[in-house]
Image: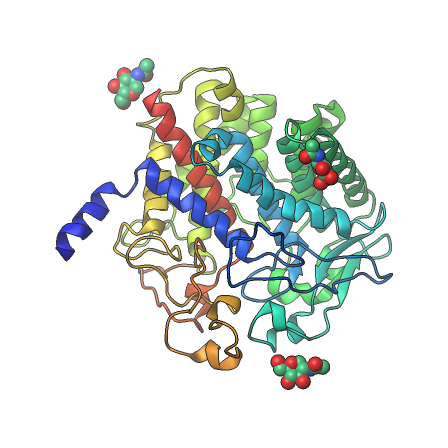
Length: 468
Ligand SMILES: *[C@@H]1O[C@H](CO)[C@@H](O)[C@H](O)[C@H]1NC(C)=O
Ligand SMILES: *[C@@H]1O[C@H](CO)[C@@H](O)[C@H](O)[C@H]1NC(C)=O
Ligand SMILES: *[C@@H]1O[C@H](CO)[C@@H](O)[C@H](O)[C@H]1NC(C)=O
């Protein structure tokens, strides 16, 4: 009986319904990471209001947004990258969200971040990039509802700029503005206004945000701001079609010398995404061939584990693979039509991409995450999933049981199932340890799930196209 079930499971893995289920779960993960006052519609029974006193230096309300990972820092740089990627997935593959009945949840997930960014943008050239102090926060293990450490807020401004942070948030808000264009026009316009101001801030006052918010450096160092400036400009162009933005994007692209084929697509290395957007927006062969060479290189030459997972870095192994899968699922559209999927779908045309190398590559990588080797890496998905994600809140027992460091080292499964969280992943030899303390295997973060969720949408989309 057991064996038959397993067999059945493996045979069916990779169907659109698996991807739809995983997409639903991923959105639950984002819901579990919410900070601030939660709405009545909250679906996470073990979460409630938290961090209600988060505020800026002049007592500005900074409640809301998402907790970054296991900890309770609200970290705008990765939160913004996450927002851009989720918005992008919805823009390109919105139909997949609709098919899975997740479109509204997807919009809510994006809006939970963008509402917070609007609060953080306290004046034209002032933006709060972090709430919570890493060392104070990391001394605590428990429920966010019960934390009582002080939560200082850190900002960038004219004297302490951060072009990378302001640029990434500008990109996120432009992407979200496009997403909300036909949902809520006034909200879309508000997002665009903030995006434009933050872009001005990023370009006029240059600097690395971790010089202005030094506490961020050991966790989320940024290696340069050239890619964020270009990324912001191209997203603003995609939204507005104002030629000044595409001109600036191409100027930055040259000036910051980011034309070479990148090795990865990650929250602090956005070049592949830039090349893809430049290809989509300009249809110029040089961009199309660059992004195609990124995918071809990854598929044919990138380091792999013995079981076939792309291995770019031990930190966020699976997220790296999912991000490339997402990018290459979009290249398909470039190749076929020179228009983005969303537009293409709107035009009512059909794609014949089922046999494509890129779709197969994305499937193989995402199926690995969903359990094709017998181990699922998505909490609550499949038969054999991570039971001990490195995640403080879900490691706590039901109330009124107390929660603290005892739960960190406890050898049992997390009492609360953190549905949908993609863990960091295995090592170069497919070796994986489901141990809470081993964050290199079991860390979960906002940005890890973003490319994964958007790649799932891409796969659902491609399966649909195949049936049309
Ligand atoms: C914070 O909470 C801990 C237990 O979680 C408690 O021991 C401590 O006294 C609290 N501190 C304050 C300032 O409330
Ligand atoms: C549009 O968004 C704004 C800002 O969140 C909100 O106050 C308003 O109710 C929304 N309008 C509609 C029609 O949903
Ligand atoms: C679509 O793909 C299938 C499978 O590879 C192939 O047999 C068929 O000829 C393709 N159709 C077109 C129009 O390219």
